[in-house]
Image (cartoon, rainbow, N blue to C red):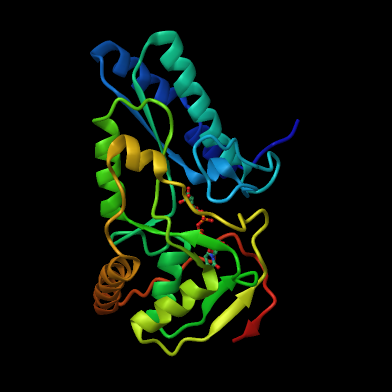
Length: 258
Ligand SMILES: O=C(O)[C@H]1O[C@H](OP(=O)(O)OP(=O)(O)OC[C@H]2O[C@@H](n3ccc(=O)[nH]c3=O)[C@H](O)[C@@H]2O)[C@H](O)[C@@H](O)[C@@H]1O
């Protein structure tokens, strides 16, 4: 019998609709509450449609290294809608695109915290692959306002919440270097397997049905995150502990300097 690593099984179990979530769904039914599923743009996988609107069914490799997370979230959506139809529980499903802000974990491993910490510490900014893959980043307060608007709405079908301002990861590295005023190099490492090559939310539905759109410009949000991480590093230095950004999903890399 195939034995999966504990962490992988856990991701699939947590991201899909676990026993724990069924308890919440049961509770929502009993008290007549609305259930919010924090879903993700990862349900679109490595998309063949750009930008991604909610009616796109996605392009996920079901057996790749991201599959437990992506498929877990897709199953969670399936379960929510089955529960809605069968039990009459009201559901709201937010497909959350890349989000950042103060209070991200230092060892989060995602690109925003990695690049900021690397730039602040004068270490190379680690770009996976050529850096031509794109993402669109939203600031956390925009997401929170979107979630509140969604919960107060009558929209039970999935809604994208994200900022459509799209950049390549290389552009993003240069931007963070400039905002920090850092002399860090850019270091190119092996690309992550099944890494989505393009991602940008189509937010027409959220604009029309929730009256919501992001308002915090990327640079303003990044400056707030940089300020937060700078303070955290000062705090950690005073306490003799400097965390290193976690090398997410990369084991070994060919190195080029830019
Ligand atoms: O917000 C989302 O929709 C999803 O985004 C992320 O997945 P991902 O887009 O891969 O986010 P990052 O890990 O921050 O990576 C973004 C891009 O930067 C690249 N990257 C990441 C880290 C790094 O140090 N260097 C680097 O080039 C990645 O390869 C990727 O192309 C999260 O991991 C998911 O939990 C979340 O659901």
